[in-house]
Image 1: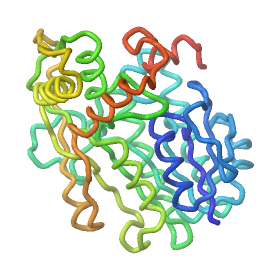
Image 2 (image 1 turned 45 degrees about the horizontal axis):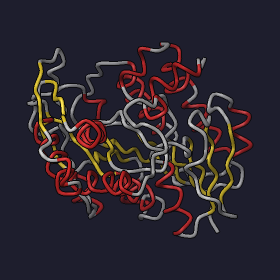
Image 3 (image 1 turned 90 degrees about the horizontal axis):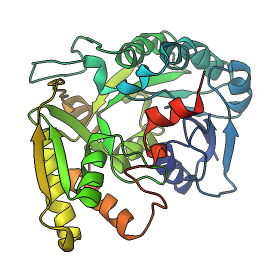
Length: 333
C-alpha cells in the first residue's frame, strides 16, 4: 500500500478527496489544523488524522515519514480571508512552503502535487488565459499562490516529481461544507430565501465540480511521470457569467423543490466588476482529462443534501460555513 499525505485534508475538498483515495487503495495521512474539525472525514483503518500546523516543519517532517506522495492543499483560502491578518497569508501560504517541500523530499516523497489557484492570473481581457499568461495578482492570496510555484520547481528531479494545478473555483457538496463560494452561495440563497441577489452579473467566473477536481488529484498520483513532471495545468469546467450561474441555480432548485417556485433573481450594483476566466485546453490535450460534471450537477448535489437533512444548522447564519468568519472567530495567529 502506498501512502499519501494531504495537507488541509480535513477541509472542503479534503473530505471529498480522502474517501476517493482510500477507495483507490491508498493509505492516507491527513495533516490539518482542524479549524473546522474532522467530522467530515470517514472512519477507516487506512486513514491517519494528525492535527498539525504546516508552519511547524518538525511536526510535518515526522508526519510525512513513510509517505510516497504529497498533495498540498492547506492554506488560508480565498481572497476575503486576507482582511484578517496579513501575517497569516505570508506565513501559512508562503513562508513555510519551501521548507515543507524540502522536508517532503528529504523524507523520500517521490511525487508532490501543489494545489495553486486560477486566481493567480488576476483580471484579464484575454480570451485565452493559458498557463503561459502573465500572473497579475490582485491580493496577497493570489500573489503568494503564484510565488510558491517556482519555489516548488526548484526541487524538481527524476526522484522528486513536482506538478502544479491551478483549479477554478470549486463548487458542490462536501461533508465539510462551504457556503462562501459562488455557486454554493447562489444555491443556498435560492433554497432558503427564494431570492438570488446578484451583484452585477456580467462578471465571468470559472468553476469546477468538487468531485471532478478531487478525481484529478487522485489521477495525478499515477499518471506517467513524463506527462506531468514540472508542469502547470489550469483546471476548470467553463467560464460563465454570474448571471448564468444564478439562472442555473434558480432552474435546478425550482425543479428539485417545485413548492419554492417562483425563485426570483434580483440585481444590484457592484463595486467589483472583475471577470476571471481560464483556458483548460492544455490538460485535455496533454493528459486526456476533462470534467465529467457541470454546474447543474453541483447545484443538484446541494439540493439532494438539503433534502437529506445533511446540514444540522442554518446554512445562511452559521458562520462555520464561511472560512473567513470562522478563522476570525478562532483568532488564528
